[in-house]
Amino acid sequence: MNYFNLGIAVGVFAPSLLVLLFRNRLSKDKQDCYDERQLIVRGKGYQYAFFTTMGLLMLYAAFADQLEKYLDAGIIPLAILLLSGLILMGYCLFHDAFWGLSSKKNKKIAVTVWAMFSVLNIMHIVDNSSPDKMWIAGRLSSRFMVPLLLSIFFAIALILMLLKNRMKNDEE
Image (tube, rainbow, N blue to C red; front, side, top):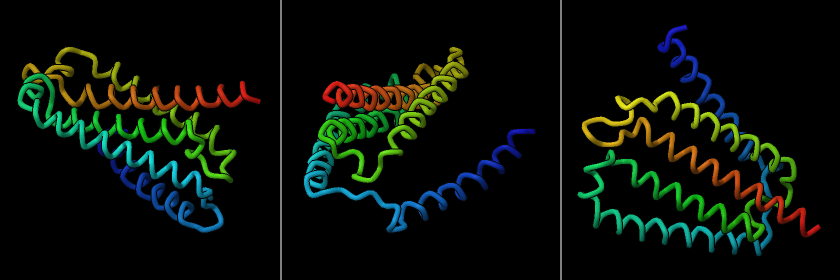
């Protein structure tokens, strides 16, 4: 099977999967319910993530010329968004507002999916670790850096989930 056919297959499969997920997510009987405290905590987490994003983007704007000598242009904003996502996830997770009240089975599925995403991105890093793919015109390429950032993001998210699960088991 060549890459063109594989791309066609993924192009047909991915949107149908997204439609299925959104249809299931939007049905009222399968929605997660959050109590008032969880909603307030999630709002506070969004606030922290937003202000982190704004602060880091202002810092990036000040040093963009120096950084873009060594990195592709889109890598730093992606890293900022991923860091803000980790801040939101960590804040909500450790204040018991990450999971809804009715989502007990989703925790194991989420840990498995995060671990799988981290491993798949690490495999992509190994594939692109040759110097001709890592460095393009004297700068680190996004072909190498994006999977690296994503694998770090998924690994930290997985560690946060496992740490929270461990803390909860120690409390019980």
